[in-house]
Amino acid sequence: MSFWKQKDNLVIIGLVIVFFAGLTYWYEPCCVRAALPQAAGSLMQTPFLDESQKQHTLSEFTGGPLIVNFWATWCPVCVKKMGTLNSFAKKFQEQGGTIISLSEDSGGLGTVKAYFARHDYKNLPIYLDSSGQLMGAFGASGLPTSIFIDANGNELGRIAGGIDWESQPVRKMVEQYFNISLNP
Image (cartoon, rainbow, N blue to C red; front, side):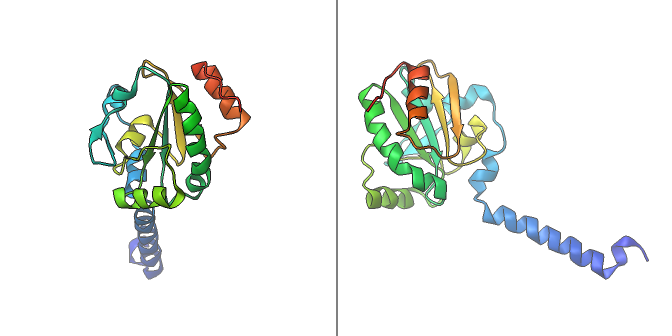
């Protein structure tokens, strides 16, 4: 009997297909698209939205120290570290820096606004990358991911995963990359 005519083999193949289809459904589509690289030249021109649904690009924020943070409300590590990012943002912005905290939530603006309101995050403007387009342009493969960008739009470094934004290693990175002292 051939391989394709054996009932057990067909059942196993069917289960494998259902498994991978389920994985695709389980992971948000933005994360699947984010794994696909885009042309590096379009990076600074890749659009994202603010809380009033106005379109922006990173090129609008060049000219000073910039940190782009990709996160989502459904990401446990992101949620755990967002409080320290909010505190860090105030100090960083006082020194002339900008933080673009981009939500990858496909639930849209309402989800992110409610989350910010619940936690009283006032130092971080709301930005959305629901399609995962900018995250994909950076080649970021997981959340949270934070990217340090100089005044000319060049990536200086990145942090993949959660980090305490008020820690000494972050202060050292900010001093090294941007020549900004954030000592307590």
